[in-house]
Image 1: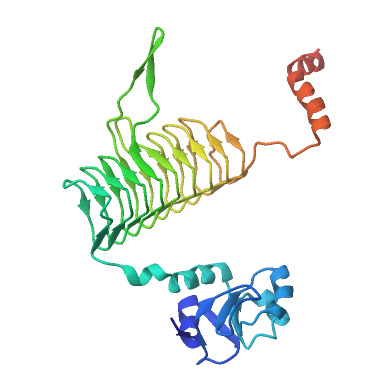
Image 2 (image 1 turned 180 degrees about the vertical axis):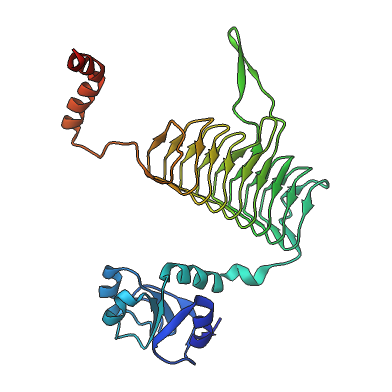
Length: 318
C-alpha cells in the first residue's frame, strides 16, 4: 500500500513542516530496521534522540520535537500526534481490505435465530445463541460466546475469549445451601465499542447490563450484572465492577481497580490503578485509594500502626 504525503496530511489532520507532497509512504516503523519509505511516529524525547539512526525519511510528530528532527526529509506536524498515529494504523491495517457481507468461520456456531448485520466477521470456535443481534461492521475474535438476549451494536470489536451474557453471580442462602438467582435480563453493547480478550460481561438480573457507545474495555475485565457504563469511558485490564454499579461518561478506570456494587460514579472521573472504590463518586476529578510502595520493613511498622488507629484515636479524644 502506498499513500502520498499530501493524502496523509488530510487523513491525519496534520501540516507539512518540511518535505515533498508527492513522496509516497508504504508502512509505519519506529526502529533502526525500518525502510526509507516508512513513516516514523515520534512523541517522546528518547525516541527523538534515537531517530538519527532511522532509515525512514518521513515522520509524524508534534511541534515540540520539530527542531530536533531536521534529519528527516518529510516532517508532518500534528496537534495530536497520538490521534494521528491511531488513524495511521487504521489506514495500514490489513483487515480493511477483508470485509465481506458476512464471514463466519466453519467451526463456529451461529443459531438461526441470531441476527447478523452487514460486514460481520466471526472467528473460529465461536457460539452465537438465538435472540442475539450483531450490528454492521462488527468483528468477533476466536472462542467468543455470546448468550441469548445480547445486543451488540455496529462497528464493535470483540477480542478472543470474550463471554457476553453469562449468568451473574447472584445467590440466596437457604440454611447451608446456596440457591441460584436466575438472571433474566440481557446485555446491550453500544456502537464503536471495543471489548478486550477474556473479558466477561454478565447479563442483568431483570433489566439489562448496558455498555455505552465508544466504550473501550481492556483484557481480563469483569463486568457484573446490571452494570451501566456511559459513553466514551475507558477501562484498563483486570478491573472488576460489582453488580448494579453505574459508571458515567468519559471516565477512565485504571488497571486492577475494584469497584463495589450498587455505587454511582459521575461523568469525567479518573480512578488510578489498584484503587478500591467503595463509595459513590459525585464530583468529577482524579481519585486514588492506595499507599505508595514502601520498603517491606517499613510497611510492617505502618501496618501495625494502621491496626491500632482506632485505639490511637480514642486516646487522642481523651
